[in-house]
Length: 378
Image (cartoon, rainbow, N blue to C red):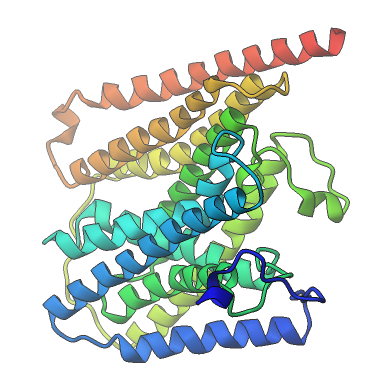
């Protein structure tokens, strides 16, 4: 146990995990671990599956708490104090850290809620697949978070490997027990998840001065010669990672098509009001674009001085706006089945919301430009 937990255990020669035999071993270990879990966690009953979800959530919770405890104790062991300990970085608002807590919440909600088809549950499950799993996969594709001067079986490495492996396993388990079906029409759900990660990471980065989830700077882009200024580099980070999610959804969509091509569906689809349904789809698209642009503009406006500020909490507004727009889109999707919708005057809500969002973007954009030119003059 001392060797596993010890603060002073260090290798004589650092281990290189990048694109070599060690990297291949790491990927193989993770693959075998996930496959083993798929076979071992094989409860058939609803009660057994509920216990499995709660146990997975508890394991993730314990792993995160013990990681924080180890980092704090290691800090004290090396002469630090509670006053100069970086709680922000240790608690962490990196993409995978955010997704770890989101996975814990999702598994508990999924285990406790009776209606497994509830919209909130489906959104959370798709965020696990499209964001948490993608983040976990990228961790092992580019394993820079594996500590190079500690043994493979040391706590800091085992905690990292198991946690990220469970981020991959959790959505796969939900697919296995047929509670999660991956369909391209739900791609907006992980898109909302990425916006959630981006807003939270940017807000905490601006408040704390740390660089969570490449929110303030991305060394990887600079390494390949893309010197994109803050915050527009984040747009490229979003697009690159989201493209991987789209590819994953595409693979499962093809799988669904092959599986169902010989099955004739006899379910009659309701006759939707096309105009209202178009408003619903437009709202989903607009929610993501609007939220992302608001996040970038507000982030630049607040952080243009290069100073940390509690105003960073305002970066959560774009996510809230996007959620409200999506709720409105879901509301209109429901009303599109109503033949009497033309008599419903609530359409004005949709129009007013869009106008308000556009005006807010313009105001924030003007404020950002004013600060930018003021700084340039100085």
